[in-house]
Amino acid sequence: MVFTSQPLATMSGITSNPGVPANMKTKNRIRLASLMIVPAVLVAPSVAHADEVAVTESAAPKVDAVVNSPQAAAEKTQGGEKAEASLASIKARAAEQIAKRQKSLTEWSADIAKAKGDCGQNAGAATRISSTQAALSALATQIQSAADVATAKPLALQIYTHHRVYLVVGPAVHIPLACGAQSSRAARLLTEVANVQTLIATASAGGADTAAATALVNSVGPLVDKAKAASIAASNSAASIVPDLGNEAIKTSNAATVQAARDQIKAADALLDSAAKALKDARHSLSGAKKTDRESDKAEKSAERSAKKAAAEEERAAKKAAAEEERAAKKAQREANKADRKAKK
Image 1: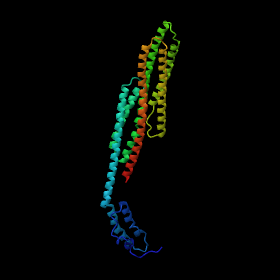
Image 2 (image 1 turned 180 degrees about the vertical axis):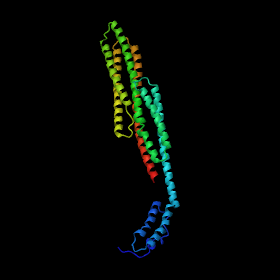
Image 3 (image 1 turned 60 degrees about the horizontal axis):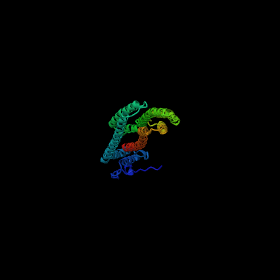
Image 4 (image 1 turned 90 degrees about the vertical axis):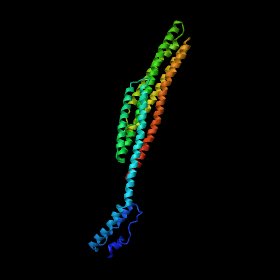
């Protein structure tokens, strides 16, 4: 290796250079200023130690000037402002999403209060709603109290993983409500069985052939029993699902459970439709029952509409809400990641 006898200060260009460019990014200016010190350590051993110290000490003020420059201070302030803005964005988004869910939970609580039937899960659904509301309120306080993005980000994501309002609580409330509506309809059909049996007895006493009507009426009970069994099974399974806490396997299992429960509700509706048709055909087979037939049809159609409306509304609202929650969760994750990156700059 060939070494130079030229003074280090001259070789490094520090004394001949008026300074580091002022318009250069702070981190690049620091790097450049630091590199200007390197020759004092790496240049030939023949150079006097005093020269090394002189060069190092002459360059040090330049490094300090870069680090403590107004531009560096401004960039540091700007980074802090970005972090604060990101934190504020996370808090605002979380407050909006929690308020939306609290509103839905309040509406569902009202649905339970005015339910026409109960498969045994209404009280549990009401308790789940109240506990979820309390948990969301506590989470909201934690998020708003967070001092930085690193603390606020995981808390905000709990809205979508730990408190699955639309993917878990919604089905756990509305499928049991649909079951309750079907239970009410089933009771109405069994009452109608007794009415048609009275008509059969009257017609039989008058000498009419009631064999067909009797067979039809006798088929209603088993159909209603099967419908109730399917409906109650749906209600019980929907009530058993829990938040996935971010676990994809549990999330997938919950979705499968909810879909199976909805299929059972639809199957129960079909069975009740068959029971209602059997009663209607039984009445039609008897003479002199037109007025009773019209009144029964009206009552049955009302009960049928109520049960089917409850099931249809639950499925429609749940699917819409689930899709919306998935979009919101992904958006929250993107925003949180973006805020995290900004905070680190």
